[in-house]
Length: 306
Image (cartoon, rainbow, N blue to C red):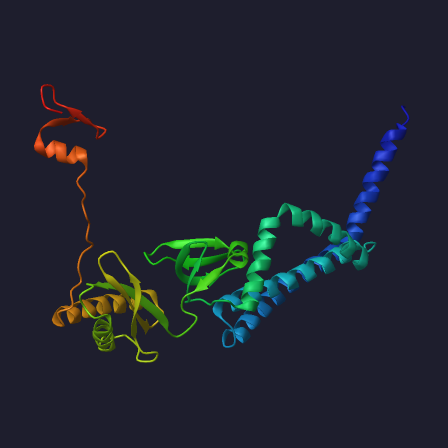
């Protein structure tokens, strides 16, 4: 009868010890799974409770992001507790210090995601604009739909969805068109030099005052802007609501009313005057006593006096 090989005994002993360790760890694994389940349920409840508590106090975007982050924090805490239960030798302090190095690696790997998340959270606390505001950022304009953890959602004026990363919104200049209750609009009117600018200003102001949507305070005004080639340019200014469509409609009615008022007052709005000066080549071409090259030079006709 052959004796058992020493290496086979070691394999059997290792397998037996592994099995015994697994049986001994089963209660801890079960408790850890229970902790994870309870953590997930608690995160769900806290997320709903945070969402309900913030709904009447903060903007919808702030409520959604903060409730989501609350749930994530609870789940992360539950994972840490579960790991320490399964591996008793691992101390929470050591685990947190290890997570410090791990977080640095994750920060480099997911730099864009973390930067967008942090920018979104900072914007929600700072609140430079809210959902429903009309803004312009990086040359893009539209109505803010929501601020999520990663991007700002904007509906353009022609009905398209625009997603801008939060970091690009946070780092750039933002023009919030609807932050204040009124917005100034203006347009230029050119009148003839023969007309009186003061009279034209009175006619323009009177016309603007009767336009639906033009606010009375501040009152509309018209002032000379420049002396053009053929016109005296007056800038008509008025205030209206800040929303894009409504203010554009008011601008349309204002221009139409001013044009009709100036016509009724006999104030001329001439087109641009262009003066033409005859060059030697143009005069020679009209008289027919010379050839004109494509470059504009004059070439005498053979046999002519020139």
